[in-house]
Image (cartoon, rainbow, N blue to C red):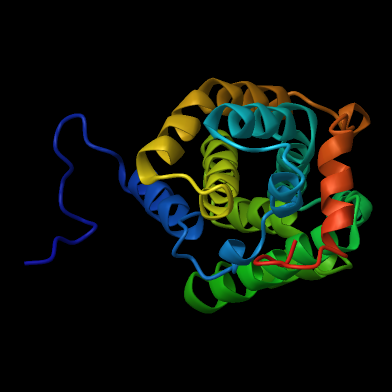
Length: 242
């Protein structure tokens, strides 16, 4: 028999709001959520072909840098600022964040990756998980929201807490990178989980840093990863779109 939302929670159980937020985050940032993340490698395909990534150790090092010093931190920061602007209904601020995030990518393929996933995320959540005011927030962006901005806006519209949203987003980002690498190197399932476990502290650190970052703190020092993303555009044999 299905329980109703009005039934009393057991001692120590999640509140109704906490349970709803967790349920939605687990759905929206699951590999099964159809935003097409499996189609992209964020330049990892070229890095594997070039010999930069050959095993779990080199993969973990590469992803640690991408997370803390590259697109991971930048995307996390954009998510934070988009969330806060949406939560405050500050349309001018949201537009500024969305426009900056849209141009803050190093290659044409990364632009395709983040805009395509952002569009899919908005369309699917609006169709299945609509929230009051979401259409207004999306329109306020002034440009199709890139993926981290889309996640921030939707989470704010649904009242999902920012720290949990950010942590789940970074976990999903790293998981997608590892999934791509597991098919390219290749890696077994156990080794893939070892890499994910090794990056746990880096995810926590990046999340905490992004929560306190200003837009002036944005910047990337992952030049080799940026080169990988650029060179993937002309790579002869490709499994992924980026």
